[in-house]
Image 1 (cartoon, rainbow, N blue to C red):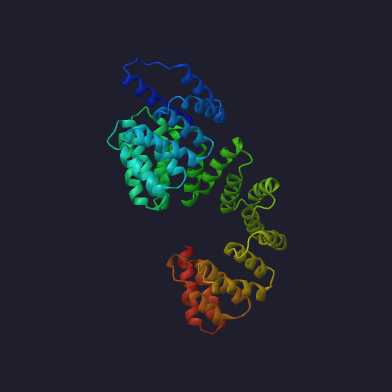
Image 2: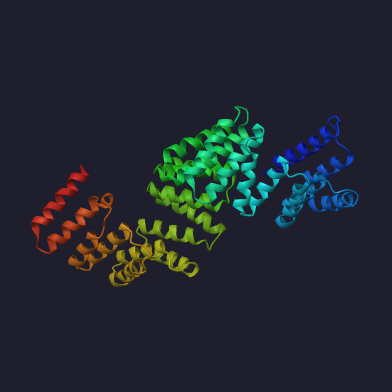
Length: 404
């Protein structure tokens, strides 16, 4: 919850107290002082003041204020302790359940959070939305994406046109669900609607860029990352992702500039080092690429992408035996049996003149989408070198059909 959302709950508690006592909307000096300390972030000082008040009388309002102050001090145990005391006094109070739900969620006690979020459903519109949204977040955290999506959609149906804050945050979570469900086009539309309502929302921009890169719209994604970096130039995630998108567009020199910017900020970032190494490989700078990957290997061990990229550099440098050791290490580890890895090993075997072994590798590539131009060319070369000219021609013809 944001400070404003929390303070709105505290205001509701105060107004409910006034209504109960048949008072008009009024705020005494104690409430005003606690509010002032809350807004300037003096939570410990506020607690001292509240503790003096609580010597005279421990009310629901006092316990909730204590819970809130401990929450912002990140002392979640005490925050929950005082909210539970408030709940004992007034077990049906929606405002207390709302605060408790948020703290249980913040401490990853998702079952307890979900119970309290569910208790908000059926109350007024504001808490109904918060309840539906909260349940959706709990389900999203536990990878129950279809169910989460249903609750986010229900929450959106309750949103009023002018309630842009809730609209954006719910649409953003809905978009994340759609990404996990591999519904990338729907996710893109979600994030774009978010940005129409909140153009400068940094998290939504990142999510849209991620979605576009998954849709292979790398140039569009790179432009968004550049926009983010114009405002937050030291954002390592945006730098790395922007560079990767540029590399996918074969803008390798520009990508290299971004990797270097990132490494000037964080010299030991393994993702930047690995990706920079692959970029250098694509530019034909194999020895420098290996140096980069060796630096990354000092930081992370047994990384599949790192070893694969390192092996590709070794193949390019004619060090086939060293490359094969790495390919075999990856395949024997049972961690990775990707088609790309099998193809790369087959290519290395062809370079060593081991054509039968290469064909065995290619035969293990099961995904038909990997049966592309390069696949049939390599297969054709193997058959040609083994003297099976009919099979070689057949595969070369398949590559020509794909190339048309």
